[in-house]
Length: 416
Image (cartoon, rainbow, N blue to C red; front, side, top):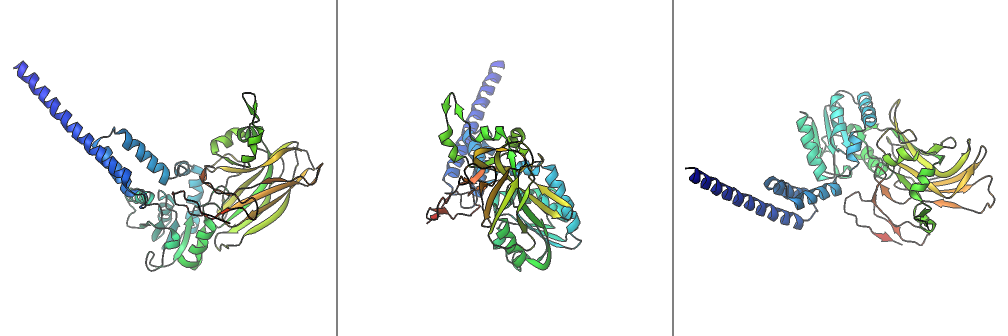
């Protein structure tokens, strides 16, 4: 009997091994199909095939790698620190509670995980219509909203807000428009164009907006660590200074910001103000003089935003270390000694979606013709990581990037 029983176990093992092999074969086939699937649907079908493969073989290496790669392409990594940002979440919760009234119809632009939409329902909204252009994110938001028992009061629309139509996607214009679609300098995620369309086409004439307005500010800063991070002078005894011209705009991640210790050398001054309740698609130009009130070395012009969500409720990515946003610093061509009375004249331009800045010494300058030019012509995510890189126009005749799409496909078009 013992021998017979042992034979039975051996036969069972062989059967299980055969089944496991068949499951692995099926998983391989599903992965093969996933790799051939076009991503024109935003990765939905590909993710379904890879998840099916992992359901059959949870340890399938290639399926795991491809699924993670797919998520990294279509779900920006800044979503996670954003959702964990308690300061940001509390500010939006307070602003929504202050501005949403019982019975309101709310349009929420950029659904993400659905947090702001659910906050609007908690504040008393009759119904929230929230749009999300990325299908994978929209699908996940539906599940989050269902898990919180709010599916009957929140409608997730898998479209860009510019493609919404009142009477088709929304039964009536919105009483309140909620959004959180700004980057480190407010402009890079297309906030002005998006909100101009929403307030004109999708909202009532007296509609409220969150945020209400935003402001860009600039000040002089010192940071040896920032300069060493972006412009190391040497490595292993070799001079690297000829490489420095590539590092003109420091996009500072929250972790780098915490270690670089930017020190202000003078007060901040306003550059541009934006009214999000009545956005205007007008480009801007300003020349301003930044003052030094302390001693040290000017390494960069630090640019940051202040955003008013509602009366008395503000978010910023200034020198205060709180928040999930990255920071922006325009590096000077060469450091300038700072002392009280030293001034730096700067000129800033924006075209409603991008920002450029140049700096020129205004006082204590030994060669008044010297110009420190710094520029930014890229779209960045809110952590300070580039989402797409564009060719910068260094002269009127140079090619200039015209790609303003936020879609994950990184296809650039240039014109002269």
